[in-house]
Image (cartoon, rainbow, N blue to C red):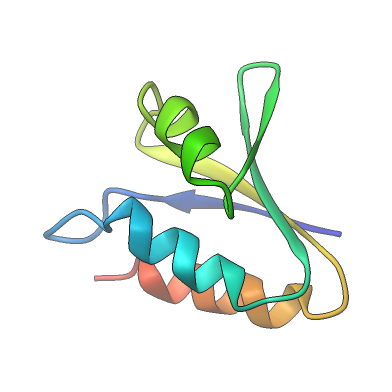
Amino acid sequence: MISRQIDTCRRNSPVPISFLIHTASTFDCDIYIRCDDKRVNVKSYDEMICGMAAQKKSVVFFFNGTDELAAQEKIERIFQD
C-alpha cells in the first residue's frame, strides 16, 4: 500500500471530479482518500461528491493493489501545475 499527501490546489484550475474518477477507474488497485474517520472511494461518484466537499487544500490518497505505483504517479501528475 502507498499513501501520498497531495496538494489538490496547486493547479490554476480545479480538477473535475469526473476526470479524477475516470482516471482512477483505469487502474486495478483500490484508490481512496481519508476524510475525517471515513474512507472515500475515489472511483465512486457519490462518495467523492460527499467526501471532497469539505476537504482542505491537501488530501492523503491511499493506493493498494497490483498497479498502485502507476496509479499514484498518475494521480500526482493530475494535480501538478
